[in-house]
Length: 250
Image (cartoon, rainbow, N blue to C red; front, side):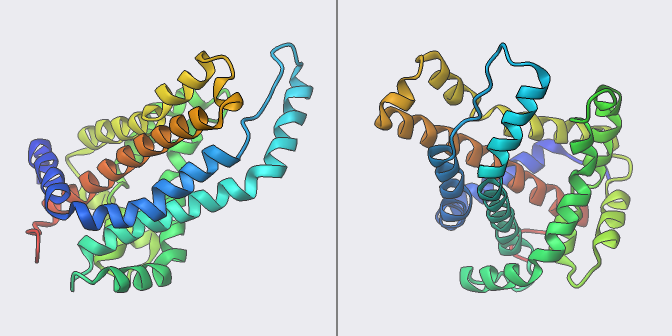
């Protein structure tokens, strides 16, 4: 089945319009607040431009040793939030928010495994030397595997590898389009908060000197990143609906 991207975007917007209150109750505490707290409380890594490679590496190790656990916790909570969003739409009984939270907690370990496996090709892009050579193959695989998490939620119990296999099969004939969609999602996620973070740098240290300015910029950065992630999740759900022939509310 060929994907109609206009239909998917319209369905995603329809979900937002109809369920805005529910969506905000999920992404507010589970995605926005952890990101806001991390931006507000975790100091930026400071590396002197004149530092050599060894000094820069030591600075990174020191910074990550102090802040890595907090950043990892933010990522796990955000992943839980994405699972709750998918549970709310893809669980056959359309659960209440409380039930979606509880069911998601039980499914989280397997969901975490699938998310890591699906993201592995994209993470390979960051590897020096081979990164550029891996961009297109990584995006292609990421796109073909993009619907593994919706499949895991909708068809549970299903194994992690089986969910990935089904996603690959489901997206057959739409590989290039899924690759493009994935690329746009990654770019949107990376750059949504960039203007506000860059503004802090342009202001020449004002955010650190003025906690109010820093809090406002961090809140705007976290809100932008949250909006980009929510849009990506709703589009992913809409694509899954379309390829599985599911009508909303059924």
